[in-house]
Image (tube, rainbow over all chains, first blue to last red; front, side):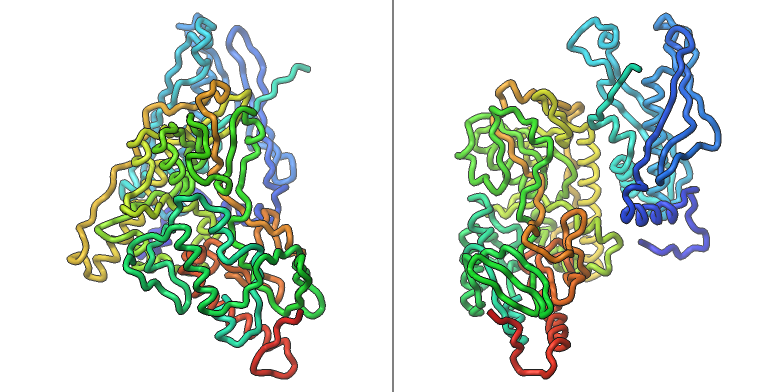
Length: 188
Length: 407
């Protein structure tokens, strides 16, 4: 790692020492690394639901966020709905963006690259004949996701591309989307 | 190691389960050539004296090289001696073989990193009509049905096998995960020449930032073709190999490929360019820019807009799957508790945590070149020195020849 000769140290707001410490500790104690993320959801009306996130499990214990987070989801008026929230698929895009962007900040901190601004625009194509059941050959989900990053940072274009590439390599949501994940739905 | 032990007057024996150069004889495919040029594929006191220093040895030539070396240094090899157990006792180690036991004060494990092919668990879901092979079973395209082949893994083995099989008229689909891209020739010189010259191959294990990562770097996409052509995903695409993402699952006879192909290729291109930057920087600092071709960069890896995410394996297009998914060492015979949770021996630069035990030939054991033929000599020198001082601590009175072994 390069040592910076200037007085100003890089600060992207990420505590990499804590992350590296956690990585070291958890290599020795893998049970503590078993996390469980949770969400609950209640139907409101029509296609409108409200999901809440508060508690999760990790480091061997039940944990709680500082506050309760809520996510309204709905369908838009062009779907003959009431548009009381973003669509679930848009929330997935937001999840992907959040995960990748957090990764960029963390990797930049680790590599001592000062970020000035990072913004992503995402777009995903979808043929809605899939979800409408109009054509069995059309999948329900996205036919692809395109993420475009604009990053202003103290680094060469290749080093910036490397941040983005590394972020994808270690991203949870990127993995969830690009690789198969088992989903079990029960009715109690 | 035998060369160094003899030089240090340490009594030793080399136990080989087959013949000298066993893995080269029995676990490699027919057309394989070494990835390191002849001048660089050298052992202590035994360099290359032939007429093609920049060429790459074939398997028969490699076997011949190792056989002759063993004879020239008069290594005390016991062939066809399979070790079934290594256990520790009060006087050191007992080495159990089908042909009797050896008692010794020190033991060097040189069984290599590639004993067992790593076949993914999802292999169980491959439809019965498809033949599956590991690289250890693969010999040449002729043993495969004249139909499509899915090669899983695009590192050195996967890339080479995909190239050869596709050229034999069997269409190849190549599932690509993490891989390392390098050109064979850069600025007119072999990439192994550069890596040696800039000191990369001599980089020490206690000098790298992330040793765990360095020890797990996938094998370079390199081949020892006699025409020195580069093998990479672009060269494979150019001959018609179909690239898909990492094989992520097989469900109801359908292979699922990861949507991460583009980033896998981006990572490999970026890493290659970092190596070329380091080479250019070194060349500039050492004022050899005038003696080599000018710096340049290679075309980024071409990935189609929407690579396939699945393949129906029940449709009959694919008749063979080859698992070029890596290898792991086999320590089932090692009855000393030095193996970690993931099946690797715990060691510090080849010095195993249990006294008198040493390890050789693992990736980045002591240096980046540790798993190359050229790396064996320096590692053996270092470890034999440690072994010698260890033995001298064990004997009460010093003698000119260490009687380290008794049968």
